[in-house]
Amino acid sequence: MAEMFLSPVIEKLIELLAKEVNLLKGVHKEAKILKHELEIIQRFLRDAEAKMEKGELGDATKVWIKQIREEAD
View 1: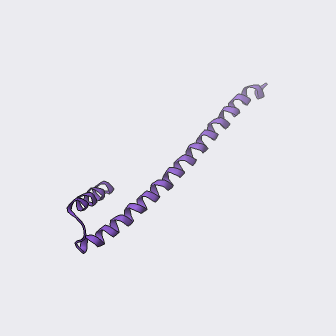
View 2: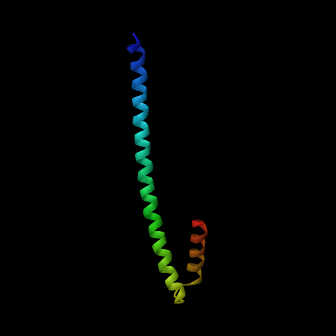
View 3: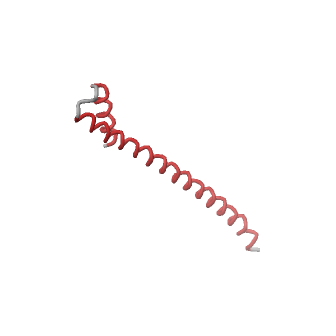
């Protein structure tokens, strides 16, 4: 008799756990994408700093770099 009541509860728990697993997989995937994008931004900023020291950057690029740094903080 108790099995009749527990079976739907267990099925619902399994369903909820499956959804949670899928959600966590999505979060992990998004985190990897963000990490990759941040690495690209860091490389760009390093290259830009080197060019800035040599005086190879225009004013518009300098402003853009400043904005990127402010957003990163």
